[in-house]
Length: 203
Image 1 (cartoon, rainbow, N blue to C red):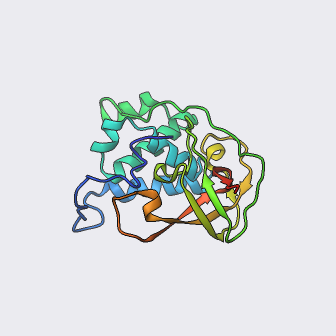
Image 2 (image 1 turned 90 degrees about the vertical axis):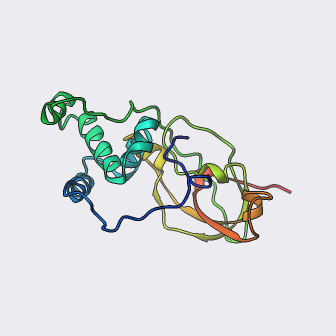
């Protein structure tokens, strides 16, 4: 899903300011604890959590501090899964309670096609309406497989509460000039890319 949440590779946001303390408000650790308990209790998984943040209205996402995004995701998923109602939340805060936008369709993994270390691969140039873990700046780009991880649930399905198949991610090494031509120094960038996002490069 291409949303305000996918900021990787974008420029022009200025210097990142770090707070003097990790938590400026007492509610922030509680929001993090609520989300952690929900994941541990299998109320929702991490992909569903990430997608709930992606689904925040762009103006809300950009204005919200980190832990407000955590709380919005947790509240949205608890409403969607019938743990609490929006009306109950609004009664607690005595007003409107902004939640993430409705969830869209997910998708299953592509037919298995493994890759080998040292193999040149291309990230598929595709756009999907639901959740994915493909950074926009590598879409359509070519790199070399330099590592393979143990399999994880395919996020495009997992985020939508679908039966997700397990597949590995590949540590793909990209030349920075391949990713940002004429806009960077020469370097290598490594990205963990799910198997279904990759295709073989034929000579």
